[in-house]
Length: 272
Image (cartoon, rainbow, N blue to C red; front, side, top):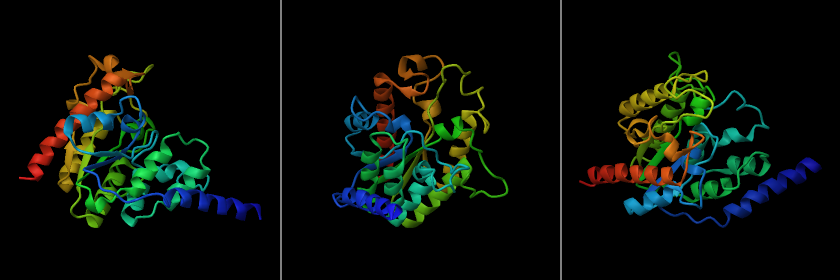
């Protein structure tokens, strides 16, 4: 009886939110991790992006999530896995975020803005969106997720496998949608060596970046190399980052402007 009541509450809990959602189109829909998703009010990356580009951007990113699927993915109580790139790609392409809404209602570790991000993704009509930006990799790196599986290139428990799976599914479902990969930016976590030297179990961050660029080239997908080209590196990261990972306000403005400049270049090439 109690289980049934809880189930109804979960169901109507996310149904009530979804019932207020109206499909809309954006120039750019971005999903990814806390690099873009963490700050929502005090000069968020998407606001600076819109200011410098004149393009609209939906911020559908979630802190703490990975592109790849973790070892706990098959546990019903591990709700965070439903916002990995693998699961978000399926939800967006099948137009069904029911699992994500139910998991969000049940999760004990959700962050306040997660509902806003999920509502945005649920309402985004990718059939009318020009660009889909995928900004993952930092958490795959810090969680030591496997880079790739030579025996199974679609192994979604690896960074490479999840990227391939998502790109192919999006390309098949939305053939007119332009997919853009954004590499993880440079980081130097407090208490650790820089990301060229620190390996959390899957490789150094530059290895994740190079694999992402290889996969982008394989699928003809535009790659923004934030790791090497955003202007943030070992010489100045303390000026733009807090704890060597998340951007402060100056970092968010620099990063938002960098993404805007890259996307304006791509937009001009696309519309020639």
